Image (cartoon, rainbow, N blue to C red; front, side, top):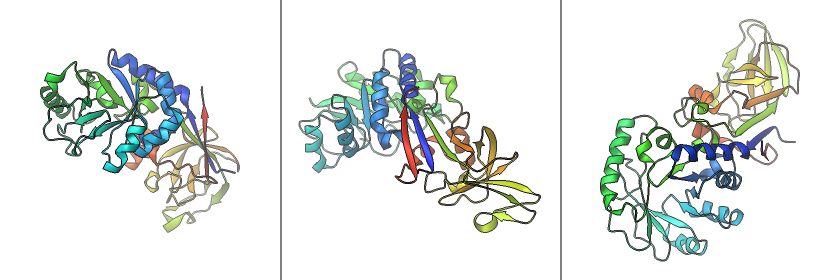
Length: 340
């Protein structure tokens, strides 16, 4: 039996796609489903996004795209990352579109030229004359969710460099944060990933953008024990009881994606908030119970108001990383798709 259950609501993804298309207006929504749909399942997420109005799916690698092509044979798929020369033939046969960040333009396949306007990562320093195989011009923002002034500076550079091609090829720059907060960046299309899954790209509340979380993560109490003053739970005795304390053990740990630095996070036990205490181990975590609970009591790790954004604040990271980090390993966890 699996020790945790990841439930993905494709109805929420579809609704989020619809909300994003309303925000984008005349701009197309390109749904980013790389990293197995940010942990939600690439094919299921992609299908729901297309049903919700997305026109294109985006992944990071040709390998990801080939897997997606089997499930969605008619979808337009753009590979956002660099492509090795030996993958071009497979990309051509699978009808993929490739991104060219710093390499010769491959023949016989539609390409998007990527301009580095300030990300300082993949991208061309100068935009060459686009050839007949170029269908898109793109850039990527470094600070859309943290420094709007620099994002606007990047946008200005990109617009200046691509002005001559306006209306001739698709220009796309916006990620989720820019699409939601920087209207001028929406251009012909916006590449939205994290917002599609109902996670706020700015780390606050997705509801303010009309988005709802698509993933919940459940488990149950495997053990309940009472600690006396001076007794501890977990490695290195990081939690030591100063008074009689009721502790619940949940059979989920960092091997499943509940990180060690999420000690201090709140989860739900039988619907009540409970704080994770002590060291999160590979296969288990402990919670302090303020009310009596029994073995088998339901545990909600994400969902019902317990959010990736809240966990990310505890772990000093971002919701993206936590969603991608959940591991659905046979024998340990199960992923179930619903349409609610």
